[in-house]
Amino acid sequence: MYGIRKQNFIDYVDNKRFSHAYIFEVDNYEEDYSFILDFVKVLFCEDKSFSQVNCDKCNICNLIDEGVYPDLYIVRPDGNEIKKEQLINLELEFSNTSILSKNKVYIILEAEKMNKYSSNAILKFVEEPRDNVYGILVTKNKYKLLPTIISRCLYFNIREDQKYVFEDNYYEDFLSYLVNPDNLFVNYDSITEYFYEKEKEENEESSRRSFNKKKIMGFFNNLNLYMLDYYNGNVEDKCLSMINKDKIIEYISIIESCLSDLEFNLNYKLWFDNLFCRLIGGNYD
Image (tube, rainbow, N blue to C red):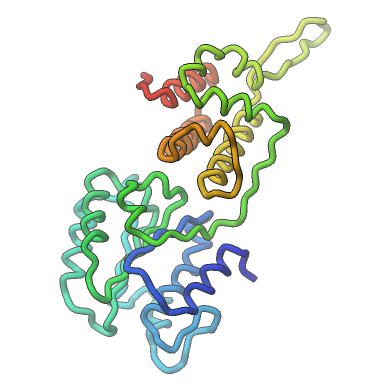
């Protein structure tokens, strides 16, 4: 049983009107890969519908399952990134005619790991689409892709539906600072105070303070979901209406990047310094 987002995509596929390039935003590469392969099978096999098992009129679906279909090209990160040479090889491969089908399909897994050179290479590919060539970029965060790539692809979010739940209304205060990010440092003490927790010293009346990592991560994850909901037109917000939408996407990307760093960062003050500096638009060393 699929969730609402995946079911919406299946309804789209059933109409058989396809774009030359797609971006899929996923939760888990391994779990969602089979879902994407079901879509690839529809692109290759005219007798295959999304919800059906492999048809028995051809061997296309079975070859795709076995990973040996010659007109399907898959790009994976080479180490920690996807390199320009990999996409040059992709373009060379697709300059040849298809072997078993009129269509050719390429999948770029973990597309957010493209560096600036490989990003520019794939941008040229999607800017000049070829007949019967379909591209699929799979990522956990589409905002780590070039905006020009995003604008030239049909986007589907097939992640499980996520909803923000704030403990209180403090997010309204934080958003008011984002209207003028310089206020982040002006109000530094009051902002960080919100994320402290008190630890009672044994046999002492006094308490020492430390940052609550769980609270930090929960708050900023929820804030990103809320800003994304605003960006997609699902909620209204007075503060966010004063910010350019491109800037909102930039803020989301910065916060997500900093949250990744937080997993390995025990110096929370330096973490906040870095976050605020990046939101303002400066560099932090």
